[in-house]
Length: 602
Image (cartoon, rainbow, N blue to C red):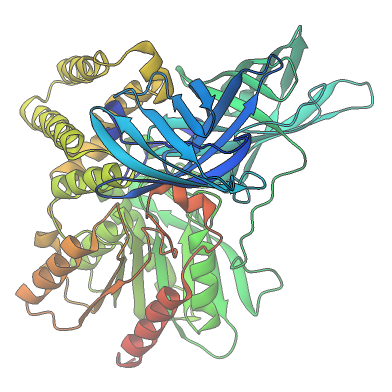
């Protein structure tokens, strides 16, 4: 197992999306004959609508108080300030948020809705809230408030935010043994429900200490007076991030209706793929259709970050669903844990995209040794960065019979990074001014990486650039926006890595001009990480430039980067969606592969 599992490298889509370091147009509020209760609605921004949830109530001394959730920004249970109710008029403030957001609104006579506006950084945005009977949460979502209780035994859930755009849900499962001592495990929901034993649990005067030696992680926190939450810090690999665990009434459940259940109507085999040149062994799963072969086959290639063979992310396993679908339709599938992750050997942290290309070609060579596989009909299916790997591998080897690029890249990586940061920031409520400032910050870091190759000096200058940006925020703003030293260190470490620096200079068009096999490029119209309107035309043009006419590009409406049916396309939405892989997208892939391989003579 890759030990720093919670601070793993993230996809280019996440890289350097610094929108949260600037004023973000957010939030909303409510009111009523008695505005106590739960409210749900939207803040209408010039470029997007932010869904919000507000909860208002009174303290023991009758003073008004409240919290706000903004799921798309991963904000939950944020404590409101200066909550006031004067007849039908309701107002509150959000302390520590850049631009000092303030809400004022009026409760309708029937008490069912509140109409008002949010003012932030000199701008005003309309807000409409509707009363709800209870907080509208999604299965598996970290709650805004915990359930009051006593003792540690039970289920607790919290969310780490290694960057402003990423949320990683953790669940503590704690029981008391026969001796009355607490014991348990921690589950990383967004990393394939990875289960980690908690070796040490101590509790004294409300202070909690947990240790997970297997991954070098620890948590120290303090329970609230009513026992509903434990607020503290997660520490791992020299980094520290704040997290609040909320007590749950029952074990969390994720509804994933597309995940296949055994027994499967096909053969499944655990295999090992050897990349002898790199001294790496990749652990994988080969699924084979029943019936006479030899069968066409596909190798699945994961996106950025150390990932397992199922490409587990945000509580979903896209490659498990994809492999199941393809195998049921007569296509054998090989999927492997990334090098240095899961059961595979190697050092992921030192690997670059070129190393992953060699791993993919090793998988192709392995399939060519299997009598059940047609050696002339083996292709590659890559997702996000995996599409780059697939294209590079196909350009090098004529053993690759076809390529499927899922959320594929067709323009230089710097353009991809700038566009994804812009799209994500706007979807999360950032102003055009903020987006422009973030883009300039990115460009300055990219220039630095290209002009200065001394690692020590690079790190010092990059740190100075980011620290100057963060220095513009107050301590309250840093806390409210989850800006931490750990986040900055993680960003610096990532951009200085050999993987990022090699990828930053990559222009896929040169590679695509050398790909001669049939290619299917598939993108979601609401993909904020790899924009379809920019990348699909570039992929098509680069392939056509070298005379490759066996090309199909498809933009699927309403789908995000993971090919889920979505509303906003934001990263935080991924785990809230029950669908893992849209059926239409699955059928486009399998139909095209079957048609393509049928034209290949054995």
